[in-house]
Amino acid sequence: MANILKYFGISKSTPAPSPASEEADFADFAGAPDPLPASVPPVAAVTGTAQALPTSTTEVTFTKWYKVWERTSPSDFYQEAVVLPFIIIVVGLHVWGRRKNRRIAKGWLKAHGPALEQEYAVVGFEGRKPPAIDDVQSSGLAKAMTTDQDAVSDNILKEKTAQEFITYATGRQNVAFLDIKLSLFKRYNPLTFILELVLSFFLESVRAPVERMEATAYTFDGREKDLVPSRSKQDQESPESRFKGMQSAYDGFVWAVVHKECMRRLRDDRYDLSLTSTKDHAKLPVWATVMSESAEITDLLLTPDLIKAVASAGDDFEYLIITDQPLDKPVKLNEATPRKRLSISLRLPTSESDYSATYAVFAYFLRLPDALAHTAHFRSEVQRKLRGTREEELRKLRKADEGEKAEERKLDSDRRKKEQRDSRLKGMSAEEQRKFLEREREKGNKKQEKKMSRKA
Image 1 (cartoon, helix red, strand yellow):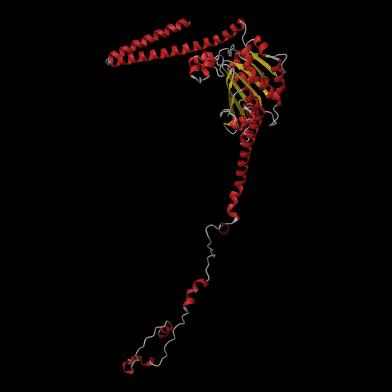
Image 2: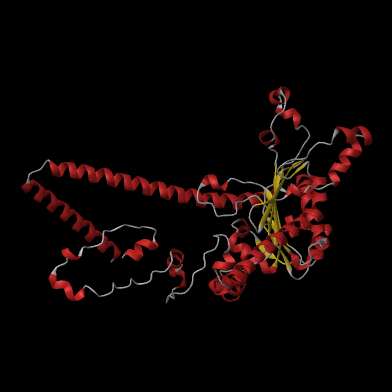
């Protein structure tokens, strides 16, 4: 023990034992040498012992939290390596499809925008911006306006969805406004596009996807003072003087030139075309036909320019319709109010920039309201026939409306009678109620017997 204390620098002096104080029992051990202490390693060796000792666990290396390459291995990302390519493909197809549709829409606008700018004062939802002052001072007002008309803005078309683009035009004589819609393929979603294409071969209710342009022009029909706002106090006081000499009204009728492949679909979808009769015309191509209410209307509207334009469009032409009746069959009288308009539908060509085939019929459609305002005034016999068809439809609506009102009145009368009967039964005693119900039963039996005897 003394050696241990000496090793740590602790020394203690102890008095030597006197022989007299030793007990006699331990005399045999008096000459035995003191035992040597176990050797104790140095402190440095003691502290390093834990690191030198062998262990059964694997060695763990601690690194910084951001050193991912030291904490992971490629085997940890097998699932992501399988899923990530599909995500990249889906996102890539979606981006490509949207850009492709935008490019097609801009190509259509580039080909037809100048015609729209020429026919209408305002094209697009933002309106036409006036020329800058510097342009007017440098080149003159007329040239600046011409330059502004030639430049077609990309903001004319509005992307309603990834496959549908719309635009609007107004500011033209005889036409209140024009709506145009471009319907394109779902290129951003190839699975849906392929599914619709496959189902269209097996199901008639599913139509094959088609890229088309649909335009509808709503005519004034003599109602300029009701539709065009007044800008000055003088115009408000005398609205008739603003449109004096303008004759935009024409007789109401339904007439169409349609592709025979679309004829059945149009008859099923549109109520107005159900009022017409179909007849082929010798001057039209074999794949086109006329749907008209009168042969005189066909002779007036089927001009050589229209025949040439329809033949030039070929299979890209779907229909050109002039109507004053609603698309859906009216069920009430207020839904049968005439609203004159012109509609055209053209398929978009496979080439993004080649619209030469359909441009002629589209330009003819833009100028057609002027021809209607000048020439669509028929003889009294034709007008009588057109008026008779519409009065017959109105008569059916009135009859149906009167039947609904009569049924409502009957239900209301039955309800009041039932309330009176219930109130009478509440004020009766049990015996009076029994007699009252027996009389009702007897009356019902007598009415039933009379009905049976009448049938016999």
